[in-house]
Length: 521
Image (cartoon, rainbow, N blue to C red; front, side, top):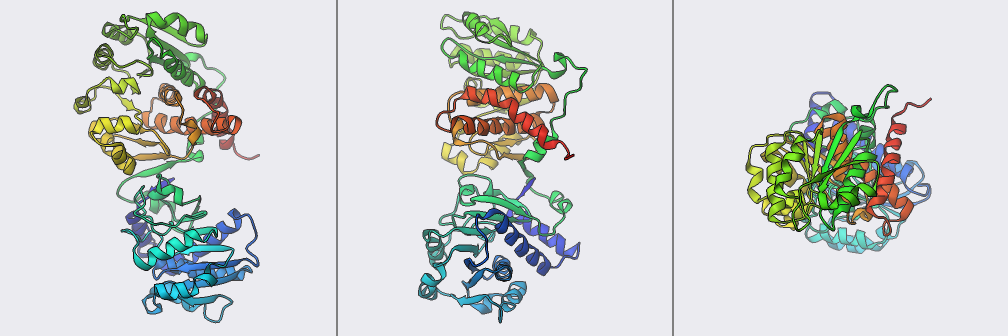
């Protein structure tokens, strides 16, 4: 599902009107109808007899609100419209739909100023449901004065709010709110989801999210120029997993080599290896310092182990890079639990020089490298999976800078370095070397516990081994990893779940996708 910027959505509407002959009035009528349909589907009580206030601005979002008000009244709602602008500033189709309310069952209250709003505030907020049709995607700077005061009052009312297209006060393109913004119970995105609705912390303002088809063909949306961004949906993920044929063997599903671990941190390598096994890899080997090999081999019988030359400190020795290069593998997952030392850094540098298979670099694998390594030519397909702190170090910025522009940071690093970037965190971002960005929609706060990132490393490596396609593997891997986290949270609760709970849920998460992709009988 493609995610659009505000400019891209405006261009889609322009093309629909100019090239397809769909009038703007029809788009507005469609938007109103679909918003009301979403309300009927999502809200827990009937709209019949409910006191509903629709707060409308002077632009197209306000026009959508006028249509919603009319249709809610037709369905038995007791509807009041607040026009939060001088009537003579409402123009075009919005003006026509406002005029159409004259003589209807909709009460219209003019509140063009803060004083007028305050005089009617108690009446307007004494309702069961609010509809936000103030600005939608039309905000480019923080709200001030009257609009800010109105949004504050709406948020303080305690009344559920349905936002049309975008909670007023958010920028369509920014993950961080400018300032005061509507805190919606439900947001109905018109035509397509906008970036802010999926990127924290702005996404928290959206509440439940639905997408309304307002009549712009998918072909128009997909053909838009500019940044390409997509949500990793269940439908897409399900389309990437095919039933396994009867005549197969383990070699058909790839060989994963996980290289990690040190004295005291072998669990990270085990979690990555089990993540790969539970994600369908045919053969998994754990490359581990020899001093740790016995314990790791005894822990689980399902993978093989490779003892690597080690140091007195119990970490891998730089000389072990050649053993890694000579081990048969379709992909190497490098980093979980390796530790941080000069020897580890030298080992990782050597592995990068002597191997040519796809590499998933995570955790201490990233920490082992100096800041300049990303400026070297990439000699193999490479995936890095930093959390925000690691990303901040890689690009020489603060964690706050990374979190304020997660999509932009990941996209720029992927393009500049020619690699795939999986920026972990709430709504994990996958960025490709050619500019496409994916946003994951699965996962929960219970996954903020040690080891879940190691599991993800193994999951991505397994799907690289099976598909040979790094973009598909990264996007599918983060989706399934988050879906497994959601299943684990259902079983254990977000507080009690641990990384190994995800391992047991990875299979059911994949089964859920295959069931979702089966046609109804």
